[in-house]
Length: 431
Image (cartoon, rainbow, N blue to C red; front, side, top):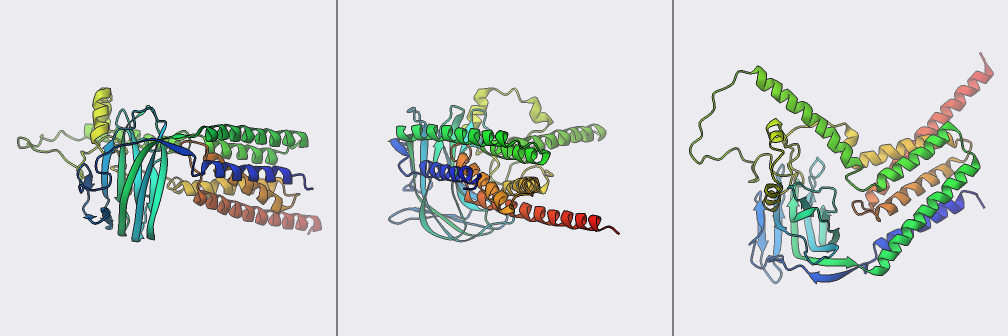
């Protein structure tokens, strides 16, 4: 038997068990319904915030919300509610959704669906928390979507949001239900056993590597990259990619603030414009004030001077201000970002592409199919491990981009090895 086969087989088997356990339909039990007014739209849009137009309510045996998409417009219906106070560790959001000829826009987030967004006590959106209940496109028949959202003491308010930022088409929503739930004890024990099994698998592989005496710099680099990718992939958000993005944009915020201060200092002070009594300040088209709670990049120099605002004021803002950014909305500031930060799918392709290239070069004496099989196993194991992390989720689209990166890295490594062999052959033949 090939020496690498037991490791790959055990990792794939453990991945399959992990996915089966985390996706089991009976994993959670209902501890009590969350009683919220008008979740079924029986009283129309009473208690809901409708913004952007294109919202209709079809009354019948089952009231149905309809959102028509329009280019360059974000349309949504939202309502806020407090988390359960009965001590339940999680809540489950269920909703029936249908789509008719929905065409996504060219930018990320210009799609349609249903979100559940958590807001902390300072009015900031916890955008790394599980929030996508449904994301749809094209033509989709009626189908129930569900999401279990773990509760945290940091969350003061939830916003339930049905939105469309697509270019065209119609989104239909009905039968929303929110229940307080708890995980069954047998699944809690199963999760613990799975974590121990994965730790044992990692230790088993590490011992085999040490015994094999793999001290080649390329091989050590390949193993280090595997550890970084897995560690980075299972780290709870916002410790991973979102922290890098926040820092990246934060530096630009700082530089733009300093540039604005310098421009204000160099320009002569203009006379203040008179406002009529009771005149309103500049407002956003969606009805929220500029630089509202949770708005992306909303901090200016003046905003920074008010950073000592009391927690009570922030809590009131969390209850009344819809968190930003909204799906498909344009940021108030324009940020430069390299292409690989515009979508996490690009990071999957680039990360696994580099990993595959180094691995193919490190194990060039072995069959390349073995290296590709090991790389694919790492990708599958990573997605399975993400199913055990609260702020991460297994995603087949991510897996497909991982495999695409592996294929591109393998192709680049094969071409590079062929070129090196050809160059070595010419050198040996001489002039």
